[in-house]
Image (cartoon, rainbow, N blue to C red; front, side, top):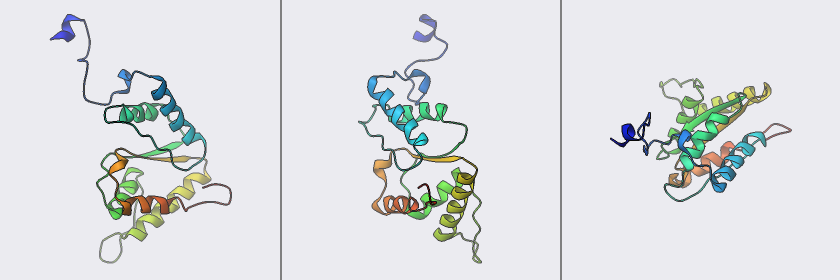
Length: 159
């Protein structure tokens, strides 16, 4: 109703995290800068925290629009996964084929091996890989440990 009154092309105040409508406060600019630095810095974790409704997801969407071309992105938006499901979701997001065993199932080891091979191959050609886990505060201890273990992969120069 008010969209036509004010001559708006779209209804305002959507609950979708549309980065076009993000007001870049000083904190939002700082959060985005940290995310971009994390990509350019060559590895590790970047943690983005804030109150519910502060705009973390919208900043992540804004970040995705600015991510360099040489980056591959996996975006996990449902953190209620166990460690095996997380590995499967990461491989799915990066489109990494995982070879199942004789029973037709792919083990955690198969997922980790495929992921490590992918990360090393993409690193060799100068690409970065970014994993974004939205609502990461809901990750279980088991999943956090699996993520920590994934950071053990390193070359002689880089994590």
